[in-house]
Length: 77
Image (tube, rainbow, N blue to C red; front, side):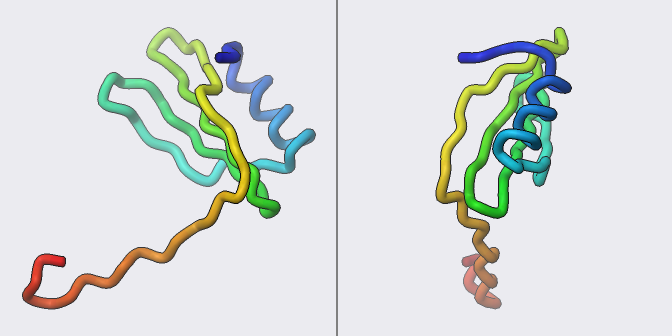
């Protein structure tokens, strides 16, 4: 797994892969998870721990953004 400073990763993802930040959240262990994706379908996840160390645990292609399913009233589904 590749680790370093998040700023360097972000610049590389934008210039090399045309990926932009599209989502961010906090994991159960307090790490910050960032999701980057391009219009072409490539994506990368960056995790930044509480010591400000960022790592790229996975990347891929063919990302598809799905629309949430609608709930059916009265069913809990």
